[in-house]
Amino acid sequence: MTTYLDSPHTTADGTALAASPDTEAQILDLYRAHLSKGRATVAELFGSHMEVASEGAWLWTSDGERFLNCGGYGVFIMGAKHPVVMDAVRRQLETHPVATRILLEPTVARAAEALTSVVPGGLNRVHFGLGGAEAVETGLKLARANGRRRLVSMRAGYHGKSLGALSVTAKEVYQKPFRPLLPDVAHVPFGDVAALEAELAAHPGEVCVIVEPVQGEGGVILPPHGYLREVERLVRKYRGFLILDEVQSGMGRLGEWWGADLYGITPDVLLAGKALGGGVAPVSAALANRETFSPFDKDPYVHTATFSGSPLLMAAVRGAVDAIKQDELVSRALRLGGRLLPAVEGVVRNTIPDLVKEVRGQGLLIGVELVEAGLAGELLIELFNHGVVANHSMNGSSVVRFTPPAILTEQQEDLLLTALDRACRDLVRHSARMPEGGR
Image (cartoon, rainbow, N blue to C red; front, side):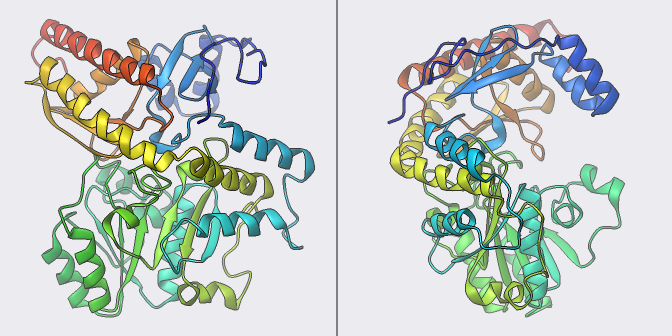
C-alpha cells in the first residue's frame, strides 16, 4: 500500500513546498477581473483560502493549514499525486507530452488496452476526451449515429453543461439561459420503470436512454433494487440505446470498478471520467463495443478533438489503472465505505437528529441530506472550519456529499468523524442563534 507524508512542508519525495507569493486579496481581485465573480463569492464563504499543494488525502493552503480532502467531486479515489501516476506522467512529460495526431502513437493504444481490461465485457473500443461533458457528447453522437435520435434522461440526473449534455441534465436553473437545447428530449423520474417504458414504447427503435448508476449530483440517490437491470431489459425490448454515465461513479468509487458491475448490466456506451486521470490530469472516455462504435470507424475524422488521446493524459490513465490494481483500491473502497457510512450516520443522528433527513451511500460516495439547503451550506463551512473539505450536490442542494479517497488511514478516518461531530455541534449552536428565516 502506498504511504504518504503528513508534513505540509515537503512532499513524499522530500521536495519542499514553496510558499505562494500571492495574497488571498490579490487572487480574489484577479478572479473578479478575469473569471467568475460568483466563484469568488463562494470562495469568500470559505475564508478565501488558496489551495497550493496536495498529496494523498491532504490539501494545504497558502497559509500552511492542512485539510483532509473528502471532496473533489469523485476525482481523488487514489488521493492526490499517487506515485504510480506521477511517475508515469513525469516520464511522458520528459519524452513526448503532445502528439501530432498524424502518426501512430503508443501511449493512447496502451491506455485503451489498460482501460478496456477493467470494463464490462465487450466494451473494447474507446474515444478519449478531457471532461465528463465531452464524454457525454460522444455518447449522444454515437446514439444518433446508430439511429436513436430521441433522448430520455432522469430527473435530478447530471451529465454536464455543454449543450448536448445540458439537454439531458434535467435542471431548470442550468437549462433556462441556453434554450432552445436539443429537441426530442424527455425526462422521467429516476426509479420509475413505468414512466421509462411509456417513453420507450411510444418511440420503439428511436430512443437513447442515459442514466447514472447512482445520482451523485442529485444528492447520492441510489437506484431501487433491480431498477437498472429493468432499465436495460426495457431498452433491449424496445430496441433502444443505453448510455451509462459513470463519470463520477466509476473507477472504484462504488466499491466495484463500475456501477455496471455492481448492478449487473452492460450498456451500449459506458462513460468514464474524473478519477480516470488519476487525480493528476483531466481525462474522460466513452467506451462501446465494436458494432456500436462502427460509425466512428467509417471516417477517422467524423468525431475528433485535438487533445483526444494526448500522450501526457494517456500516461495518467495507465498510471491510474495500475495504481488502483496495485493498491487494491476497489476492495479498499468497499471496506472503507462499509465502515464510514454507518459511522457518519451515527454521528449526525447523535448530534443533529432534527436537522438531518437521511444518510445514504454506496462505497465511497456518501450523502448527508439536511432538512433544508441552507443547512447543507452551513455544514460544509463548519466542516471546513474543522479541517475537512466536502462538496455540495448541484442537483440536490440540501445534500452534503463525501467522496473520500480509498487510501484513508485509520487516523484519517477518525479525523473525518471527529471533524464531522464537531461541525454538527457547531451547526446546532449557530443555527440556534440565527433569527427566524435567517437561513
